[in-house]
Length: 484
Image 1 (cartoon, rainbow, N blue to C red):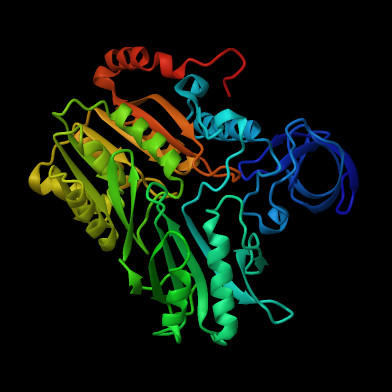
Image 2 (cartoon, rainbow, N blue to C red; image 1 turned 60 degrees about the vertical axis):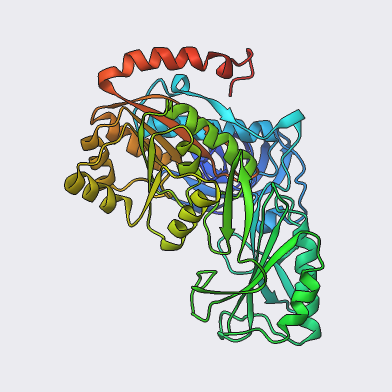
């Protein structure tokens, strides 16, 4: 009989969606953090529920063939890269299975492996991806020995892990953080204390335009201005690539990182990046995908699924700064984008102008409000609708209006396979069939996975499926044994 504090010898046979290993004792599942499929481990039971329990990993008796040594020395304490102890090929398999299993369990699609053709990974030449993120948000604090520290919050806490050389962030961050810390020490500028709501510097936020190598640095401060800011600008601007420096004012007692006011101290208030041949202005508070290399892969797939000939009306819901919209506009008759954040729509309009793209219209508002309004008041049409919602998925009113508008195709870009599966199930019950899809590894070494799916209006699903399968046959051909 298993009891709390029982010491057991188990083999890990599966993993949860959060990356915990699962071992079983007489059919009773135990969740074990930092364990991977194939490990044989000694554990101590820490908590028991009616149908499952949790256990602490005490010792690895026999390592799984998929286990690797994490590249980061603080990976276990930080928790940001919770799959770093898993080989990259095994990470891709885990993420592919995560998408497929959600479709089977939630959307009730038994043939999910046939629908989801594979996963788009970053394993070029077998290398494990590094330095892929273009944005970082480093909290600033004080250590027990009274030194200024920067790093990342430990998982499920606000304890700062003091580490500046993150393996998935851009390498320039290390020099930037060391410069900021030296400046703060020299001029006696204290870090923020969230308990007492005192101190000045809360976060250092960096953004890198991979195509141009322009770097933006923003200090989030608990004040209206930063003393000796000219000296900080002189030091940061000397770092190769830094073209924009700003302060962001956040004086609220909140977990939100950035406030509403940003003051540019040096350079422009944006940097310019490119995805394919489309340029984007990125400001300090703009939403922009953190992995531009995989963003190009994902958006190219969205363009392929949209199957545009130049005559289509396209709606892009949850459009952000117009990243997908402008990709699609080059092949569509007209693209309409909807986003709730006013600043993002300002960016989208500026980005359309920057690229000389005139066949776009952008609306500020909730997708579930703008789309029904345009449908009911202006009889809006759409041949293709693209959705890229937040983790909570599409609002039911937006889904209902999509069905009323009755586009030929719906392209669904998702950052959460569970809500993707939920929405696919609803659309499947209301006239749309999942034709195909793929997972996409936008966040290597983490448990997060992006995915994309093509849904077809049932009236012409059969004809379109046959055509699409022929077009994509070469792309999806996978050698025997390589399919995840």
